[in-house]
Length: 351
Image 1 (tube, rainbow, N blue to C red):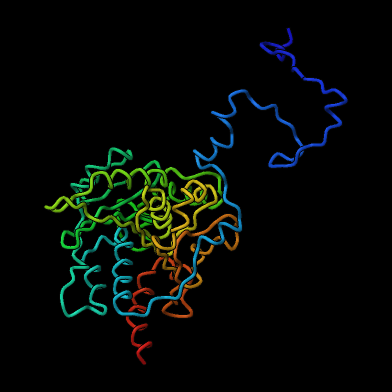
Image 2: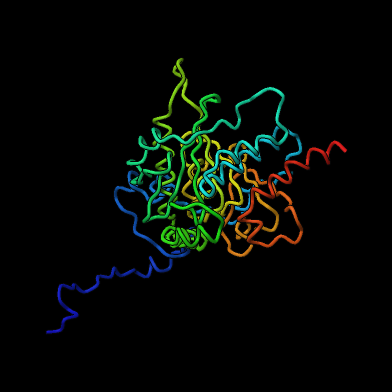
């Protein structure tokens, strides 16, 4: 018995008459190929389904417009906020509230504005962990993680400002803190999954699981935000560096309505990730998402090598502290370059 004939039916072909064959082919998305339309086309047409699922891929010329270049800030208030945001984005690496306070000393106002009064919130972390399938750390307050996807995130709250920050960790973030080499060695189980997500996003092979989890986590947090005595919910803003910046960028613009995000040297989003974001949210990305990139940082400029990659939002390039700074130093030590610029930009402008 021929095993290749088991359970098989001969292919059925529909013959075309000479009249049908002589008809000119219709041009369009499928070229000259003809497709027999199905009867319930009005209800389940491929066009409608693709729009509903947002699977229409962005073209390269559309992707290029998503990163809106702006000049770096020079006013003291914005420079101070940038330095504080940088330390918030680096919190998964150093877990130091003191460094956030030190950043707030740059152009500090005479009157206390509570911009540095951040604390990790285990209570909020417990409320949202199960929705995204994350584990809550028993040692680090407000820390959520998933060993399978490599996602790491911290929930921080500022009661005085009535604001919550969801901070996504970049590559090498995990259970241990320290410098780049120490994190790479101690968090190698996380790093492997994180590099896998980076490569998947860079090559456009799909949306990494950690990106989807970041979106679910953000949506869950929006539903369970604390509120004031008057019933007004706290404000939510996302932060992240490198891979964490890409997750913050994707999650912030995937919400309805979208939320704000401040990202540092973030990985660029792939065509598939960008195409998954509602078009109306992409249209206002430059008003909601701010990217600070240290000059010549390769991670934030991978789109120059691989097509279909881009950050979505307002992009500002900050000069490195030293011209001879290595590529790794520009990316991993981003807070040093950000704070150096924040301290000196305002004085240079006034002179």
